[in-house]
Each structure stands twice: as C-alpha cells, then as structure tokens.
Image 1 (spheres, rainbow, N blue to C red):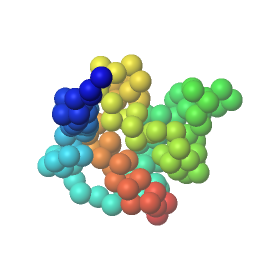
Image 2 (image 1 turned 45 degrees about the horizontal axis):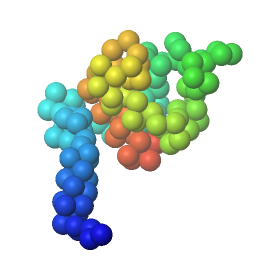
Image 3 (image 1 turned 30 degrees about the horizontal axis):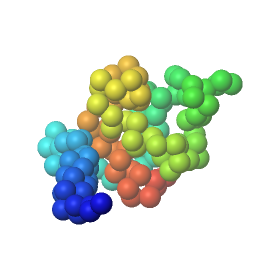
Length: 122
C-alpha cells in the first residue's frame, strides 16, 4: 500500500492556514475612537471592573467561583482564567463576558493594553 504524501501535506497546510484567525478588529487595527491611554488599575481598570464585573463576581458566592473585588483578584483572573479571551468573544457567543452585551471597544482595549503592559497598579 502506497501512501500519497502530497494530498496529506496539502490538507494539513490548508487546515493550519484556515483555522488560525483573530477577529477582534480593534486589537488588529487599532481603534480611532478610543483615546490612547496607558491604563492602570487605579485610574482605569478598577472602574471598568466595578461597573461591569463586580455585580456577579463578588460576595460569598461569586459567579463561576471568580472573585474580582480587588487588584490581586483581577490580576490573577487576567493571568490564569482567560479573562482576555472571554471579553473578546463575539456578542453571539454565550461565554462572552460580561454576559449582558460585552464591554465597549474602548474598555476592552484598555483591559487588553493593561494586561500587555504588565498590569500596573498606578
């Protein structure tokens, strides 16, 4: 039995090329609507978390077991729980956070930049 190598390589290459995508336009191309900021937890991120996340992710029984009530909790979530992935999901995805419509493009960009810059407090 002779294995045809070319079709296998061709199919593998096609799968690799078409399965890789990143479809968050504001991250790919930048957003002209968002003012450029160097986000810090104290000046920007705490307010975003308080307004959009703490309602479900606080108290004795936080949603998904994820507590987001202070800097250390948010840093841990950004590092280990896939927070950046969840806030970038399409609105149609049931796993998007926050579940009531997602964050604005500017809030998403601020959070992603904050994580990329090492999660500065001040």
